[in-house]
Image (cartoon, rainbow, N blue to C red; front, side):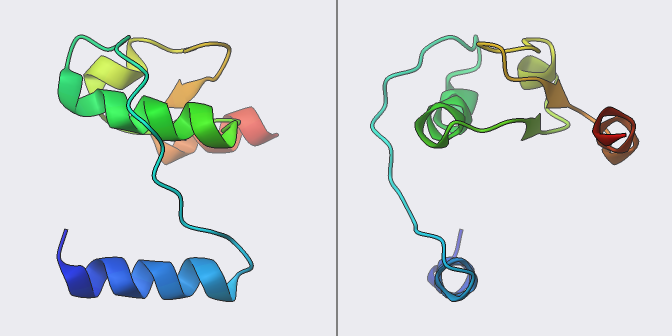
Length: 80
């Protein structure tokens, strides 16, 4: 990610009353180590869902009771 992109995202988060976190690396559940930071973040904030089209992540659903969805349509159905 570029610094400009991160700066814009940070501004959006702060304007919405949120906060930017940098969770520690504690998760090693995924076979693709590049995906473990996603799980670290989900665990740190207590995410209700993980939205990703990454097959390594979606194949783990539900991960620690957190479902993940590959398609927005699946998310829409779940929210009904």
